[in-house]
Length: 111
Length: 113
Image 1: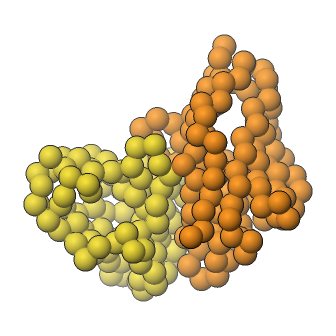
Image 2: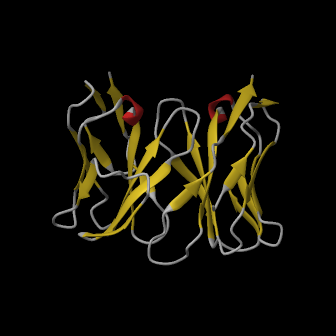
């Protein structure tokens, strides 16, 4: 257990529904990252927060995706109008400097 | 496009042997290098990081970095069946304020008893 928690751990939804995932980082970590991982691939970067500021977004983050970190603590990742291609493991990581520690992930299945 | 390449394996070694995992990266500006272990269905777990050329040892694990050749490797000595997992190489290319990791696809290691 790295101290990064994610909720829910699993989510099954129907195509077109909205889903929201939560990440609670290690308490003293000011950096928070979201990644997506599909089967047989390494994690791919989605977005990055330093404190409450969203400083970078990947081109993978379409306009259906939005992320927030309102008070610089926990973060949420919302996917609107889910598509079957969104099925993946969504990973959150936090860091104080460069070394990132991952949470357990949220596995999303879109039917 | 900045890339990190790994042999997908599977790499099979007998118990007690040395497992050697390799990784190459495309961006010469890369500054920081990480190895993560990922068991099936689980999230990546940090094993080691290395910033400078040469070797870095931690228990049974040794990371090796050669920036001139743009490769980083991980040696696992006295391999155990519990080491069977996918090993992900990750690189930070910016070295700046973002620090997002670029991952390879991972090498699947199987340690046979």
